[in-house]
Image (cartoon, rainbow, N blue to C red):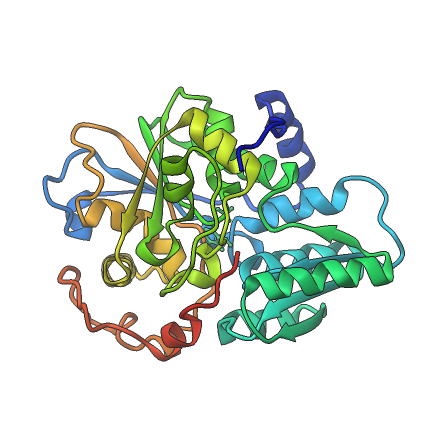
Length: 347
Ligand SMILES: Cc1ncc(COP(=O)(O)O)c(C=O)c1O
């Protein structure tokens, strides 16, 4: 159903304030300028700017928003509770530990082992729920009701957009670009980036075929429920776009392109092969928009956000192979970790 009340979107001033609060807490992640030819990108033009946000604390951009959520007002003695397919839970657990706040994280039983291990190592109370992200979400809400813990949402709260906005602000300080390309799950990341740029720079979203949540929402004119599956579903598999992310995307995102899973594997492989950068599938999805030609950017200065690192290279031996050549996608590529994640649906 159409959203009747516009969700609040962070202003540039709000994002500036958020950046000030986050400055002592999060990493200013580096950018590198790469010759497109190094990644075997056809029609090599201006250097491609890669924003290495997978070097953020807890391995993804989610740490920014998670910190802001924890800093937003008094916290109950029961602490906080969140649901996640992995990265957001890891970020909440990380930030909560740093701030001395008790945290409970509910994850679906399809969460990738690399993320579960990282989560457990951070000292949060972890509950593994049979089913999908939505089941973990329901369990986390029930936990909040029962214990008084503050409920945190993975992408549809203003702090999550503001946190992503700080990433965009940082990027703008580091590199002059005409276009920024980011992966989309529930829309917190792209929503925050779009709010910061406010149309001054083109913002393009990328989803995988099994997780075309925002593309479906934009086509319908409002967020709709979609079935989610595939390689990146534990990160990009929100079943419904968040109201705020959708509102920002509708206003400022020039387009959302959809890429197949094998193109994501190919993008992961190119990053590894050329630069020895290991990303999880969602972390390479934005690059796949360029390598497939789904997004053509002739003459533009483009930044690609590499947004997540939580992958176990040993579980993806067909991707992270020493000496593997950059280039040819392998449609048969699939890994133990990949298969474990299929159909998880999460954020
Ligand atoms: C690595 C990574 N990239 C992108 C996303 C999508 O973010 P959002 O749900 O804010 O659109 C996620 C969500 O968990 C993620 O973990």
